[in-house]
Amino acid sequence: MKFEIEPHIGVGPIKLGMSRADVHAILGVPEHTHNEREGFLSGFMVDYDDNDCVEFIELANSNRFVAYFQDLPVHSTAADEIVSFLSQFTEYDKNDPELGRSFIFKDLQFSLWRSVVPEKDDDLDGRFFEAVGIAAKGYFP
Image (cartoon, rainbow, N blue to C red):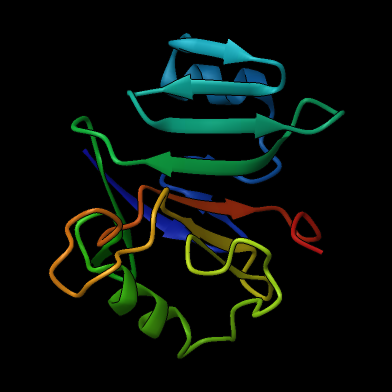
């Protein structure tokens, strides 16, 4: 399954601002729920606001789907390449306290995350982002 990430809009058929009921109608019953976060397809996470509408979508690397941004597969493209690509559209937050592990592109409400930063060029750990997210306007202030 393929999902296209569209900042300010959504991921595939799941749109920012969509109701929880509409998400369930498309993705089915969540595999797990924790507070206002629901997980589907072994890595498609949806967070809801106080009105029960989608405010954040986070995609972990999953064997059940491939996530793309502008035809670039986000989990199998080198982290530095994705940061460089997104930087063509806008800057990332250089004051992010987790910078290196986390890159937040506030103008796009787009986030990238990995658990570690590679220590050397040939390190495999941290070479790829483990999660990518998009949010409703104002989520990343």
